[in-house]
Image 1 (cartoon, rainbow over the protein chains, first blue to last red):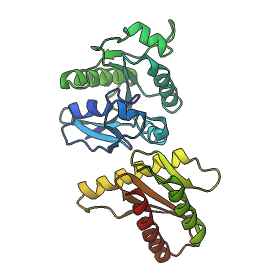
Image 2 (cartoon, rainbow over the protein chains, first blue to last red):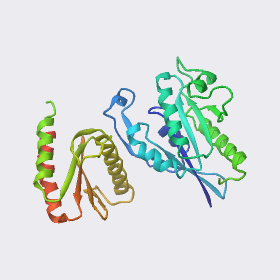
Image 3 (cartoon, rainbow over the protein chains, first blue to last red):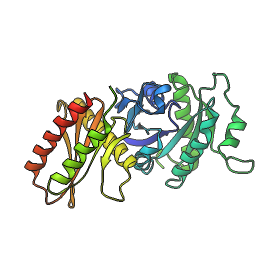
Image 4 (cartoon, chains in turn purple, red):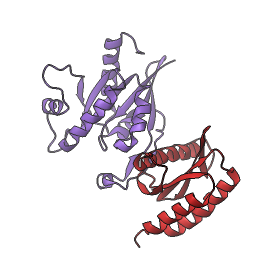
Length: 182
Length: 123
């Protein structure tokens, strides 16, 4: 059995926990606690350590999905999780432009620690004020000429959409590494 | 009623200064924000709080998922000392940092005593 560890990261409320819940075939191990910071205005609960889900991928392959907390005070969890990742997804809520700078900081944090393949997932694209892909990429620092990771619109509530994102990342990872396990 | 932070922090200070070999203590929210703390210099209150919350939540998850029941405490034993996490109320987590020289029995008793005081103040 080959296991691929996939990390799902991104700012608070991007849809990381929902993403994992949508595809995991085991009951997700979550560490949700009632939010008491500014997050409480957006949602009641927030991840304080990690989410863990699992997805069987053919008879010989399994995906382990790890979701990080969103707040920077938990960056030691980002560090622990990203160092062992085989690939990662950064989810960004496209309708909250004030968070793009923060997402960019998260990206830098990850890139300083790992070179594994990345996929950018744009969530909340159906909401008013959602940015278009090109503008969002620019806001994340992908100026023309700089190599861009693959980008996808993801609906974290929709199992099919999440599965497509995971397949895209696995394919991207295979293309980059030439094998399932990088 | 508003939280009496002054009293909470004086309970913490008394605990740290009054218990042999205790180096620091912190009271934090379950989602990892500081309420009050007395920590050794160089330790960042915000980081300590986030770590405490993450650790306790994972420990409690092990308790429920691996059928260990409700969790009294998480005990981290290093070669330089101890880190002990206890759930105080549903709104607070209590972290104690102690030197390796600390007597565990005394430590546990003192933690229990302080917890009772803290619970009254948080009620």
